[in-house]
Amino acid sequence: MDKNLLIDALNFRHACKIFDETKKISDDDMSFILESARLAPSSFGMEHCRLLVIKNQEVKKELKPLCWNQNQIDSCNLLIVLIAKHKEVSSPEYYEKMFRRRGLDEDSTKMYIEKYANYLENLKSIKCWSEKQCYITASNIMNYSALIGIDSCPIEGFEKEKVEIKLSIDNKKENIAMLVALGYRANAQSQKIRLDMKDVVTII
Image (cartoon, rainbow, N blue to C red; front, side):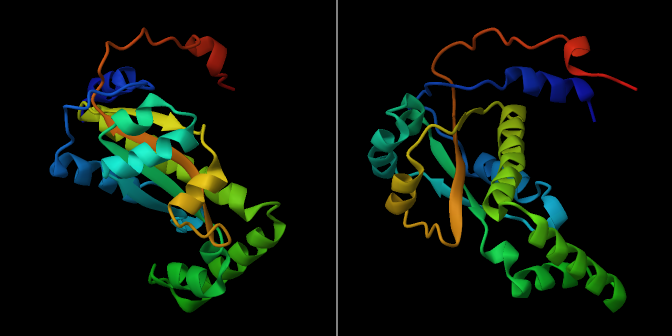
């Protein structure tokens, strides 16, 4: 694997504010991106994140006023809604199934189930924890999109409850963590600025 290709992709990735509406993401590229999301890591392997992929332009236009009228919403080709499952991941029926699929012996499986149940009891907010897992998925989506020359923009600025109602999301069971807009840039990328490595990393 060429490490430089990965670094180049990370430098290519930026928060694209407006997309070229004439350029479309192919079905093959969309499948690649969604597979990168499906394979994203998650705490305890619970796969907290569900994806809603919006291709319909009318739906995007209807969402735009609920998303601070940001141009990314209706200029992007694909709008991915990352939905955090909180009721399901706290259901014994669900998490026991998720642990048993690993094919471990019964003692090991019971140990994992007990450890997970104890972890849930000590969590301050299952909703917040599940949303954090969605951010890992979003990172995969954006970075793997960049690897194949597709631009993205992570979006937290939206009226969550109104968007959930619009998309018929039952917030007693799950809630929107964030949105990711995908497409091809309409304008040149601004210079990427980051802190120096010495200001970010401490090795002990």
